Image (cartoon, rainbow, N blue to C red; front, top):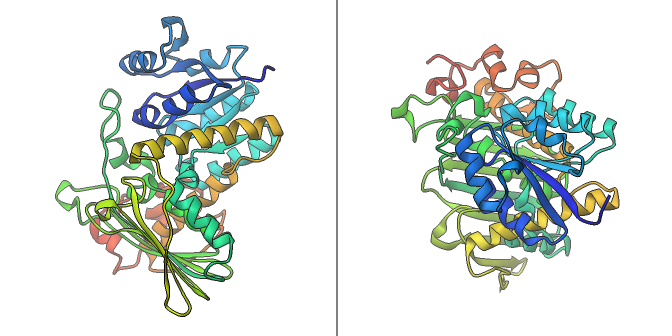
Amino acid sequence: MTNTLKVGLIGCGNVVYYGHRPALKTLPDVELVALADITPARRDIGGDWFGLRDDQLYADYRDLMAIDEIEAVVIAVPQKHRPQIVLDAFAAGLHVLSEKPISNVPAVAADLARAADAAGLKMAMVHNYHFLPEFRQIKGLLSDGLIGDIRVATLHFLGVIDHPGAAEYQADWRHTLAAGGGVLMDMIHAVYLAEWLVGEAAQQVMAFVDAPEYAHRQPVIEDLALLQIAFPSAYAVIHMAWGEGVGGLDISGADGQIRMRYKQYQSGGFNQPVELYSVDSQWQRTDHALENLPEHMDNTARSFTELWADFRDAIREDRQPIAPAAAGARALEIALGAYASAVTGRVFSLPLDPASPVYQKGIDGIAELDVWAGSKTKAAGIFGLRR
């Protein structure tokens, strides 16, 4: 083993360009050795991005895994394809950095987390919002006790931009049932952020899930999700939609509040934060200088670079990364619990019941639940439910 972490990239979609590429080209002790993608055009694009030779580009990821010098792989294919690739990586003795969500199915996610532990290998999730400067700054203020114990954290993500996938593969794959869900699954960042900011594991979730924005398209997945999450000593609210809605964050504590907003009032991850302030128990406002790079995409690139550095260090120091497989599995269960709540009109306890069809099958198990007649999700005809 050398000091340089030598890695292989599996899947070369758009996230590679703005996220993984800056990290792999910035960190001096992480080296991309090879790339695999089933699409010839994406292999060529990836080769150009990284300056790879033709003999470093593979159609079959298993050929990439056979390269002796590779120590870890990053898996950036759509989630339905990830589980087998992850298991093959463990069988080959390779550490894994996986795009989010960890899987479409909670039972599979749990299996992957157990497989990583059994193999003695690291599996880290691309939960890069941990490293966006505004969220790290807010986490620091909370850890310093600025507003006392958290009461309610509200995350506004109602302006999620609906970016298409790579056209050479399938531009609309996030709008299919194969994606495992819609905007909530696409932006599961908000779910793991809620747990991280509160500092506890979620115990219950209830939600409304609908598809009003794309009703004219006869959608099969949601474009609107409104969640309430209960923790042992606090609550979180997530408002999420593809569209033009409110973005930002509000946290109420025992001794004050924290508020943050983005440029043009957009949602987190899509523009620069421009306002961060706290209000104490005497209603006195304090503005906090934001720690940002000049451009939003620079912050995004840096978040991936810091995520990669944490993954590298977790391997070298034999410790857990900031977002191990177990964190990915918990976030997935919250999202699927929200879908189940919206369909049944009930609060769902977490972790999910392993016997639940949603735990065993993901959204494919939704139709097996006792559907509430007044469900907005049923009325929208999504998740395989008939209107």
